Length: 204
Image (cartoon, rainbow, N blue to C red; front, side):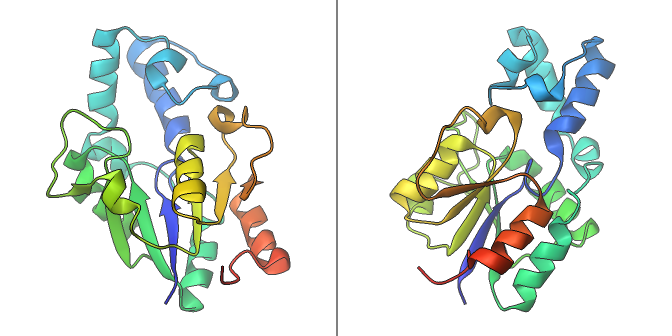
């Protein structure tokens, strides 16, 4: 059956809102979520190299990952797609060290999925290549639809992989203009309406 690509952080899991809370707790620094206009969290959070290294390690600890909450409406939509026979592929660029805790989070939150794929989206210096695949290898896969929050990854999916893309609206992806082949949605309820009335899952 056709596969649907679903990004994990800030598409299924409400991740960066939790990061803002952790930033205030750890550094006493208050950042407006709507002001996070770049995907570079070191820059968005005004962290030094040392601060960012600590913060980045902290937010990838299992106890932090397991406390994340899924977005409202996401489980209903994914269960609907799964019930229609689509394969759900959860895709992430997280550190490979989070493999087990990420799978545990998906199970605890009853997220339906057929495959869990770690991709070296950001060319990280420390990657377990037995777990994460390269973007080149990933580009050989086929998806009928993708839901992403990263503008760069959305463009990769659309242009290189010829995949229909829903861009899940986040402050860091709003400075994009009108992108051919990419639809912006604000919520999972809106994605459900798009599916119902616009035939977004029609075969390519």
